[in-house]
Length: 124
Image (cartoon, rainbow, N blue to C red; front, top):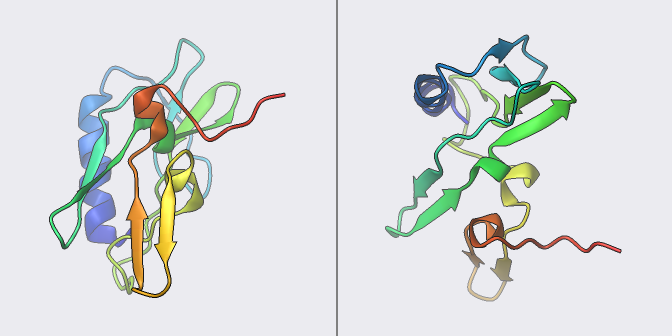
């Protein structure tokens, strides 16, 4: 995320997680939490796209557990001169259906399947 977008998201997340103990940051992330007493839950993040459609990123796609006791906000500050406001990473698209239409140069997507108590995972 560009610094302006990243700063806004971080401020919002910090404001709703005031009671969750923070942990030392783990690169490349900038905000981390101590999860030894339980998981971090944040509200869904809605991205409104140019065509007016909304893509919802759930907690499952925005908080990454990095070890047994630490989970971090899974977004990275791309800097003030970032070419794009937001670049979506692989962690944010896990458990989303994506449909690439090469002919029309379009991308179709679902919001996280975890919001529907489902996933794309295959368990043996």
